[in-house]
Amino acid sequence: MFDALSELFGSPIIAAFVSAIVPLVFIVPFVIIAVYMERKVAGHMQDRLGPMRVGYHGILQTVADFFKLLQKEDITASSIDKRFFNVAPFLVFAGSYAVYAALPFTSSMLGSKIDIGLFFIVAASGLVVAGILMAGWSSNNKYSLYGALRSAAQIVSYEIPTIIVILSVVMFTRTLSLAEMSEMQTAYFWNWNIFGGAEWNLTKLLITPFMMIAFLIFYISSLAEVNRTPFDMPEAESELVAGYHTEYSGIKFSMFFLAEYANMFAVSAIAVAIFLGGYQSPFGYVGNLIGAEWLVQVEQLFWFISKGMFFVFVQMWLRWTLPRVRVDQLMTICWKYLIPYSFVNLIIIGIITLI
Image (cartoon, rainbow, N blue to C red; front, side, top):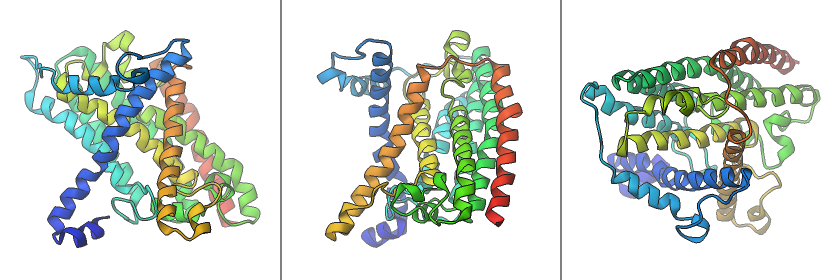
């Protein structure tokens, strides 16, 4: 994308600026749609309607709330550390935003076709932990600090099984590039990594159940990484008011909000890219049948966003289905179950790959 924009504008500086802004074109509408979707999912699961007043079936309610939030007064307590307090929400959003640079939406629409895309994503997402700790400590509020410490412990812990699963897939595919992984999984669902990849051999038959286990571990860990139920301990409303963003209001609060929903799609998109074919269609491309290359790109964008949105929906579904776990249960799930299982799974996948 950067090379194409450089040719279009004739300046690498302008191209870099436009490239940095482009993900917002997706993230902001996505957040508005996802918040509306979450309200409706919650409503229907609780046998009610959700927002109905602003627009048809309340479709403009989230837009109205978004503009209202932007106009809210930015209140800051007198005893906070203003420098860290002001930087923290932008640092959290920057960590979430940077991940989108390596996500392949189509074979031609990706921010940066870097060979170490997964390594970059893991490294960039580490900024989120620093931002959350900074927000909790600088707020000078015990609830914020508790929430921040919980979040740091939770994210750092669940990063271990997440990275082990990523290593399993990297060992199988022999690449760190999400774009290359998506290309390897071709255009039919039985060639996806979760079903053992594109090559039909003994390895595919043996490795499929372990790739399914790896996907399950990755998705559970990703719920904890983005602080979603049943792992939403850092924001536990019944215990910590609002956790690490208790003292925030206005535009700063909205940055945390944007980061949370941007993360929801990001982890879903990563799962899709490494396990479920990425932007590849499960059934082949209509564009190839009629000789329309541009239509293939549209289909790829549709499938990538649709798969990602499905797993965002599952995150919302789980929120209104499962109870919140206790802190000790949270750590038990990670250290006693997910990490040992993912490690054993890594070894088995490595042995099968060598066959």
